[in-house]
Length: 284
Image (cartoon, rainbow, N blue to C red):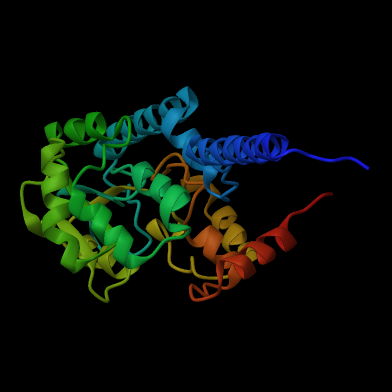
């Protein structure tokens, strides 16, 4: 029969307490170690990184605006030239103008898209308004050079956008801080119930519209809010205008192309939007 002395029992108890203390300390220290950031597989990640970091994006946008300058020169010498399907009647002697979309055409919203990926999960009018009020959107590479050239040729510059009227002041301050030409607030046409086609028709009454510049089919022709196949067919019907009267910039993040996948149901949960996008992928 093994007989344990009081001294032996105390040694065992002390050893157990020490082991427990060591384990507790290790667990606490492990909790203090900074865990690596969870990898975010957001659907906008690659497109936003490309827009923010790639040499190719800067190359493409500068190239696009160089094409725009060349087309502008041609349009100024050809009084039959107009970019707007809405332009009718005798417009040959009207003063020249160009019309440009704002977001991803003149202003780069890449930082907001990064916030969607890292914080918000998806777009909302409230978070976009907050971004606009920061007044920190940079200019799309090449945009200012083109706009300054157009002004030097006495071409009126109009901006039209889906931004809400309540964002007028912060948009104007952002654009003027970048040195973009905006001599009159009336040259900035924001969303007030008038469609982009309606705005083109309005400007066409007083100006010969030489170029349309944008990143969404709606910036050029009515009928953008339809299914993907119809949108592509509409673009192909106007093939001769692209790169001449119509100057388009890349936007792989958002636009009617994306919303058409889920039938413009912006209330649809993101998971269901993603499922519909997967169903539209073509493997053959």
